[in-house]
Amino acid sequence: MLLSVIILTKNEAVNLPTCLASLQPLNAEIYIVDSGSSDQTVDLAKQAGCKVFSHSWENHAKQVNWALENLPITTPWIIRMDADEYLTPELVEELKQVLPNTPSEVTGYQVKRRVYFMGRWIRHGGYYPTWLLRVWRKGFGVCEDRWIDEHIMLTEGRIGSFKHDIVDDNKKGLSFWTEKHNSYSDCYLKEYTNPNYFEAEKILEDKNAGQARQRRLIQRGLYDKMPLFLRSFIYFSLRYFIGLGFLDGLHGLVFHFLQGFWYRFLIDAKIYEYNLRQSSKALSKELISQNLSN
Image (cartoon, rainbow, N blue to C red; front, side):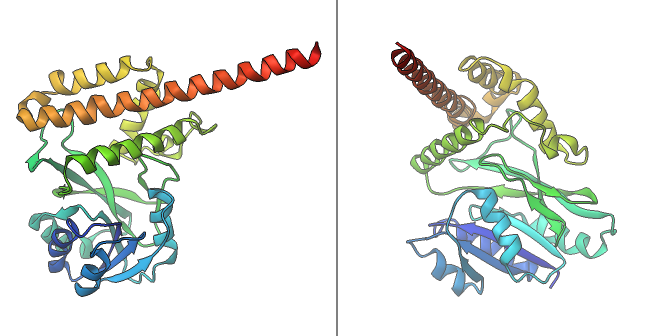
């Protein structure tokens, strides 16, 4: 075997069969790291011949790094996937052809992610292609220790690129999507309130990190410095009008509005609420200190 697959799961019985079916032609070793599923996820994985492990969830980065440190992987290459993703047949063939002939200086590959929403491909608004480092040599990849927007980084070597796509197509519906992004906003707040949030990050220093570095540079150098609430209006406008997101039709309007405006407005609202609470605490301490001194 040339390739091992790591899939993180929790209640993914709706999505997992499509993911596993796309992997079948690879003859890969598939590792499922489950964090307490109460549906048929684990049974489906075992029936498909996957090796199933259990580990309590803290955040995505720590779960990935736990998998890399503890799974009995012996293959030279690893690919990480979400349960709601699947490989296109073209990418499967590309993996089979390219990996055995990869030069030693290439230690990772980035792939294009194609996102589907309400069953339709989101092609515009700057959302495609999104390049993600998903395939790397064993021992050469580690996940950034972040609460949100974490990326795999190479410890050495350079990144290659595959021509074909990995597809993100979650079938759990809009209610799940909004609940998930609400939880993402909580993770963003944890990241934002980290005292080291604005310090230098390794990915910004790594010129080989590709699009992930470019996006982080834009976030740190521009978006994070803009006023709360205003930035979500600007971001949505750029995506929907300048980035031609309106060409994605009605389903695109729903997606770009929710993902490009509502989600980021929600983040700003939680940051604003946090700042109010911190100001209130500081004022209370000041009043107590004044009363004690009097």
